[in-house]
Every structure is written in C-alpha cells, then in structure tokens.
Length: 569
Image (cartoon, rainbow, N blue to C red):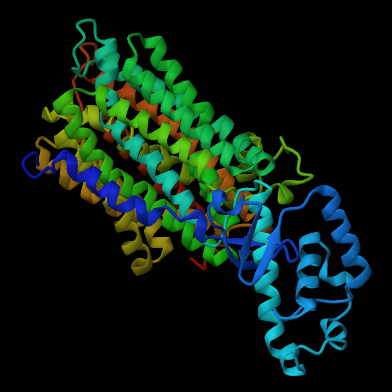
C-alpha cells in the first residue's frame, strides 16, 4: 500500500486542476432585474474600474453619472413626458425609456409602448411589435447592470452560483481529511508522558472525549447557526465556520497541553455549520425541489467523498514524512483561504430583500424539540427511530478510533491506514445503493442488520489485516439497512412534517456521534489495558455487533406490530 501511494504533489496538482472548474466567474453571472424580481436579465457584470468612469457607452446608449439634483430633474422629465417604453435605438422614445429605467420607474405605472410610438415617425408597426421586447430588455438591463456597479453593489448569485457552495464545502472537508488522519498522533504526542505517538489507553480516552465534545456542541448549536443564516445571510456563517475550523486546526498543531486540545475542538463545535449552510445556499440558487435535491447530492458526493479521496493520502504521506503537525497547519491555511474567498468573491445567495422582516426563531433552532417529534409523534415512528438509533450507534464504531485500532492491532502508520479508510468510505457509499433496490426495503432492514453484525464480528476478531478487510467489506454490504430505515422514517407521517423529521434525524446523528466517540474510546482503552481480564483490541466492533442484534430484534417487532402500515415496504 505504501509503494502504491501517490506522491504528495499529485493531490495538489489535482486540486489546482479542479479549482478553475469550480470557480464560477462573477463577471458571467446574470443579475436580477429590479423591475422583475423573479427573472434574470441578460446583462453581464464587467469589472468595476471600467464601469466607474464618468461616462461610457453600453450597447448604443450613452450613460452619464449625474448629481442628485440632475437625477431628480431627469425623473421629473420622465414622469411628465413618458407614457410608455422606448423600443428602438434610433428614436427619442428609446432615450426616454432608458431615462425612465434609470430613474427606477415601474413599467406597470405607464401605458403601453404603442402609445409612445403612435407619435413617432422613425419606425413602423412591425418594429414595434417584434423588435421592441428584445431591445427594451437589452437597453434597460444594461443600465441596471451599470447602476448596480456604480452604486458599489456586489453581483447577486446567479444560476451557477451553487458551485461556490460546492467549492467551500470541498475545501472544508479537504482540511478535515488532512487533520483526521493525523489528529490521533497529535493527541498522543501531547498526552503521553514521553511525548511519543504510541497508542495508549489515556491517549485513546482523551481523543474520544475531545471528539465527543465537538459533536455535542455541534448538536446543540448547528440548528441555531442554520436559523441565523436565514436572518443575516449565508456568507457570514460560511466564513464563521471556515475561521472556526481553521483556528481549531491551528491550535491542534500548536497544542502542548490537554486543555488546549479541548479548547480547539470546542471552537470547532460552536462554529461547525458549513455543510448545512452550503446545502441552504444550493437551495437558494435553484428553482425546483428536484434540481435542489440533485445538486445537494452532488455537493455531498463531490465535496465530502472527493475531498477525502484527495486529503487522506496527502495528509497521511505528509504526516509520515514531516510529522503530524504540518498537515494540521496546511488545513488551517486552507480554511483561511476559504474564508477569504467567501468574504471577497462569493456572492450572497440570500439577498437582503429576501431576508427583510425575518427574525430568529429560537424554537425552530431547538434540537430537543426536533428529537421529541421523532419519538412522540406515533408508535410506528418511535419504533423505527429506536432501531435507527441502535444502528447509528453501531455504525459509530467505524468512525471512532478506527485509525488507533489498526495502528495498535496491525502496527500500521497513517500512510498505510489511509487507503483502507478511503476504501471503507467508498464501500459504505456504493454498496447500500446497489443492495436496497434489488432486495427491497424490508429485507434490507432485517437482513442488513444481520449481515452488518456478522461483518463487525469478523472485523473484531480478525487476526490478520486481510481478515479485517474482509470483515469491513461484509460490513459495507450490511450498511444497506441504514438508508432503508431512513426511507421508512422519511415516508412515515404527514408530508408537511417531513422536513422537521429529517432535521430531527440530523440532530440525532450528531448526538449518536458524541456518544460513540467517547463510548468506544473507553471500551477500546479498557480492553487493551492491564485491568482487562482478557485483552481484546477488537472489542468496539464486538459491542457494535451486539447493538445490531438488538436493532434486528426491534425492527422485526416493528414489522410485526405495524405490519399493515409497513406493508408497502
């Protein structure tokens, strides 16, 4: 695995190749026309210096900057003399129409353009009927573009602006991947008395607890931050999340005490909202729910999986060659860059006009309220959610202490563990999508939990790396039970509550992550310590298998008790 690892420069070359495709040019995005808030005009925004001259030509129209008194005078002329739109570039009507557009008058406040042209001899009726709309749109929109830039306004997000969200989430997860494969070594170096990076019980417990603190604070605060973005806009929260995680990575790299490690992850916990806000950004810049669903799927697939495929091997190789601090510092630098791009280049997807009058709803941001909905709405929803909680807790064994586990059991370093981490992530993403459509939701839940338990048992008892990999492959097939349970939960209850139910599931996942990070760390630390009656390094996977056996029992009971309601599955 080490011999086949790509050179360090390959990951950065891939990043440089991807960035130009992901950076939508602000110059090429269409502006929203003030006369029609729901439509996009065809004018393109040019760079500000060229448009801030005193006068310039846009199309065939000469536009001059005016003093306030001159502008008011021109508006008065428009109100007195213009009954309609100007339609051709070669008559006084056109100039009048442009003056009216420059003055900001609503087209609905005037009469039809035909009335204007009835007293004009510069064109015939065919010009009025056919060529007018296109020329009116071009002239008015050009003036609108000039006016927005002259007024110092930033171009608004257009139809391609969702790519900005993908870029920011991608950079965020690149930083996460760089730090993830090196953080256990940084924690061990701080915690172990001799300063080594060896896997010890105390280092395992500390690493689990700081991750649990991070997830717990995220569980408490992510709903509030998401609601806050509805009030103040998406960009401030995206920048906040970048700065917060960048600070976390920097402190992790520089930390010399356990307390500072906790502070670092606490900062990440109170600022973590990048994916949620980026998903809202995508929804803001799409026109239909179907289009939003597709683009959010692309956001998750490319930003998360793509980032890890790049960051895991690069972070592992850098960490092995230069030590675990350097990848964490690079991760911090990437988040500083991410924040600068947000503040200087990224357009706002939720302009001030759409946020006007909104207030922060603390009840909607309350994570406890979302959880109550899942477990009190109906007996069916409660039973399926209990099964899901058990599966989610079992699934946490693959995230909590995975790197420490293979380091301790097989003597791997981060460069050897990274390819397996990528393989696990890819299998967990691909296998369920191949299994559920073929065997159905009911069998995916019942058989999936059993196969999942079998895979975890094999991984926990595996005496060799090859046997461990086989166990993980079996586990990935059994993970088909997770999307199957999610499908049942999403389809249960009223359609009007579906968003709240899925939001509650997101909060539940964060809460389960907090429990598993701390819980599995303590299980692992105990069963490799001298206090254990027998040392079982794979104990976290065996505990996971027991939880899955309980999940199978609860699921089977739910299908038996609620057979009529679940018959469609």
